Image 1: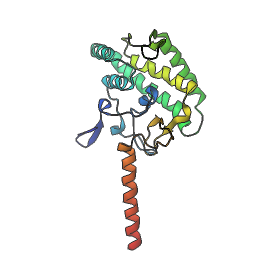
Image 2: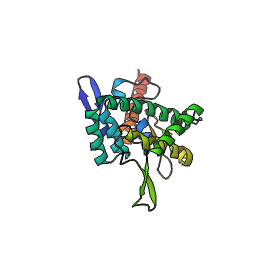
Image 3: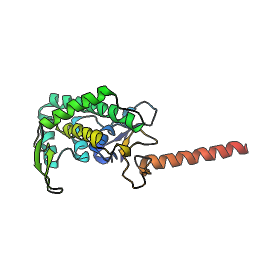
Image 4: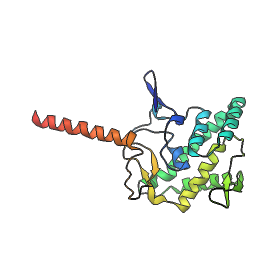
Length: 219
């Protein structure tokens, strides 16, 4: 969903399907824009700390109860909130630098892998093992954490899991915009972040171009 404020088209994370299919890729997708074009102000989805929490809620890196605690703490500690927002931008850039080359058929830069490994290890030191009621056994959890960086720790951890356990063969780049996603279709035919967004826009653009070409041939 888009909301217009004057001439700037603003997208809210809470009303946007980030479409990555994975917490780390959803973080990458908090900034958009067309392929090969500079990022415009309206392409940015994270503007304040609440947006980091909204990302966490959509990606599943925070619970509703935890989100309420984090929002209260952010209001009480605005400097910490600003630092956590800056860390979100930095983490997003790091995850992007590791996964975008893979989606384009290249290798991840060693420096990005080294830093991501460091952050993933740090995230685990802040996690707890809790019972996994759905799958059985145990899982890592950060739901107890009240630090404002908490929504980013599962993103770093799951980024490492995706790198080591995959499925990297299903990692794709949208054919129109900057977004990354995991293609979970059976025949691996997904081409767009979503048909409602880039798929439809691409079809319209191709239709307009074909009409333009037909008119040019008749003239």
